[in-house]
Structure formats: structure tokens, C-alpha cells
Length: 407
Image (tube, rainbow, N blue to C red):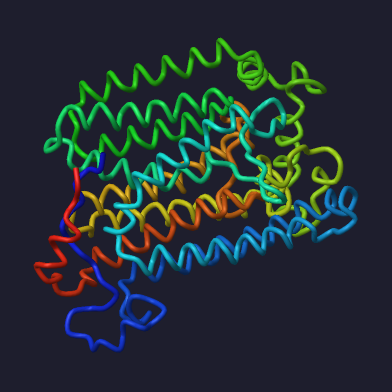
């Protein structure tokens, strides 16, 4: 079932460097990294730090009242942050070819985990999205996202060189995963996954008529899901006029809009949000942006959007610098995933989209989202390193034969 992987093999040192450098924690000394990779690492570090601070402010009231410890959520998030940065380091350390080989089995395993949530999952707010293993809650629909990017890059970069059977097989796998996520039900993640794959396919050069037909099919599935699921239909109608039922179905959005509007130009100040105290629901996850907007105001919100814009531009530069179609599609997919999910979360909190369950990457509370987001960021940085030509000489013929793709 494996698809061919580009033959370019990237190693942990630059050509001509001495063998002792292979023991460095990073592929190369940080000073030899391309500017885009250094900027991305710095931006991800800043994003993570600000995310912890915003979460600390958004969660202390609820944590104090419900858990008896104002830092309860912050402590747990910090532990997940350390583990997630370890995963980011691993993504930077290993060459992209290894990740691409890992993508297919990882995608199938996480896809089975998504299916398991429908049978043995923990149901919260009407959705079965979590598998509970002891003290750990696993959300497969979050963990699957980086592997969707990797396998999508493998599929679409070789679209014109693989058989129809392989195309249908992997399109069926992707479609099945999206339908399973819809069944949870989780329309927002399913829509994000479908849109992500569609944009990667468009970037790979697949014909526009095919892309148009796929878009129509995907839109039809989304509309059908809304018509069949009452709670999704209520969310759409309440989004159109939340003030019509401000104490009922429109309550979340109304309180979010009040929080954002209360921030004014400069905000109420860090830690001084009023809406988070007892009015704004889900203030540590889905609506954490509303707390940020209230405390940092219009100026802070604009700065966040400019930060996301800069991140997208750097990701685009990384994609343009890549040396193979696979690397380019991975870079496009990683940038689209992080940037797109952030924009969707902000759009929901500000009333530009119906309420969904998408977290704000590296800010919202949740270990699964952190692991997925920082792995995605690490893969993007790895694309930058390989796009800059940080490669070792080709392996010997014996090793090439051993690493040759199967199937």
C-alpha cells in the first residue's frame, strides 16, 4: 500500500562537515540554519509561550473553583508542552523521508482509533471524540492531522505516476476517515481535513475540473451532515442571529462577542477579563481567543493576526525553497493546517462562522492539540532545512536497495 517516496535522502549534517557533528542535538549548529528555519523556530517558541500565558489567564478562575488549584490547567498544559517540544525536536532531527515512510501506517492506526471512538469513546457535549486510557484522554481526530498532511503529500506529488488502484485506495482511506470524523460528530475537523487535502491537491497541479467536482462533492456532504444532525443545524441558525436566543442556543457566541467588544482599543489588561469569570463558556479551549481579545483589545488582536500573516508568509517561502514536490506539499500542508485552524478558531469566536470545536493551535488547553500542532511545526522547519540543501552524500548502493520503496 506504500506509495513511492522521493529519492532525496537528507541527513543530519551538511556536505563536507566532520562526522563528529552527527552527535549534535540539531541537524546542524543553529547558526548554519537558513533564515526561514530560525525565524520559524523563534515564532513557534513565542507562540507557545504566549499560549501558556493566555491559558493561565483564561483558566485560573474555573480551575480554582472546580479543581481547588488555580494553576491546575496550566501545570497539565506545561507537561504536555514539554512532551510536544520533544516531538518537534524529533521532527527536526529526522529527515523528511523517514516521516513520509511512517505516514501510511500512522494514518491507518489513527484512523482505526477514530473508528474506535464511535464504539468505546467518551461522549462529551454529544460528541464521541475521545478514547480514555487511564488518566489520559486521546483525541485521534487531532493526532491524525500531521499524518494526513504527510500521506497527502506522498499521494498528490506522485499523482501522475501511480496506478488508478492506488489513487482510489488512498482517496477511499481519506474519504473514510473524514466520514468517521463526521460520524462522531465533528463537522469542523472533518471540514478542515477535507479542505486541507483539497488545497494540497490543488497545489500539486491536479486539473481544475477534477478539483471543482471534488469541491461540490465535499460541500454536499457538509450540507447533508448539517441537515441530518439537529445540533449542527441549530448552531448554524443561532450563528445567523445569536441575539434571538441569547440565553439559549446563541449564548456562547453572545458572550464571546461581549468579551471581544469589552476589550476596546487597548484591552482590559492581562488577567483582568470579566467574561471568563462566570459568563463565557469553554473559555480555555474553543473560545480562548475571546479572553485574549478582551484583555489585549483591538491592538492585541491585530498583532495576533499580523503574527499569523507573517507565519504564513514564512511558510510560503519555505514551500518555494523546497527541492522536491513532496517537500513542497508537506510545507504547504503544514502551513495551511496551522494557519487555517487558527483563522477558523478566531472566526468562530468573532461570529464570522458558526460555532465549532476547533482549538486555537498552541493556545487552547489540550495535550492532543499541542502534540499535533508542534509536530506539524517541526515538519515545516524540517522542510526549510532540507530546502536549503542541508543534505549528506547519497547512501551506498547497498543502503539504497535496502531503503527502496515497496509496493
